[in-house]
Amino acid sequence: MDDAELNAIRQARLAELQNRSGAGNINSSSPPSQQQQTAANDMSTAILGKVLETEARERLSRVRIVRPDRAQAVENYILKLYSIGQIRQKLREKDIVEILEGLSRDTQQKQSSKIVYDRKQTLDDEDDGDEDDFFD
Image (tube, rainbow, N blue to C red; front, top):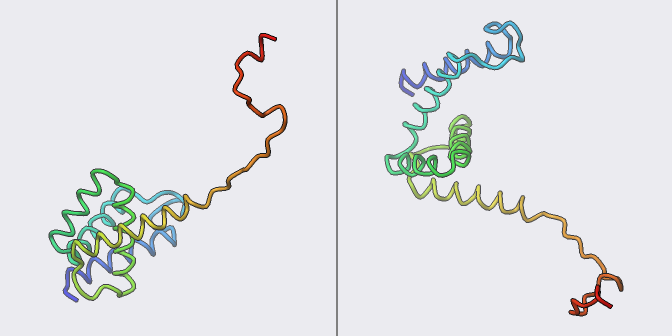
């Protein structure tokens, strides 16, 4: 690891510890400050710049234009993989597409688990095609 990466990790860890202990905040449940958010964004940008090839970054930026929530989910997934040491080489555009397809499959599975009601028809519900029922 180079010095810039180590410093970014140290800063992120320090910010995390301060959030947990409440040293930087009056109330530990309050949201992180603007400075902490900026530092976290800078760190994630640096990590993504390190683990993504140019084409993959371009693909992710195009996805962000159309679906910002999907792009954020991909970034979070990549950062999670990086933090546990699962990324051994730079990710290509093909890898980003695979991650996006995996997220799409997960979303479709969540949406496909809907409850469908099959109601029985009663005599009143039957429609015999006559619109003249009201005029008898």
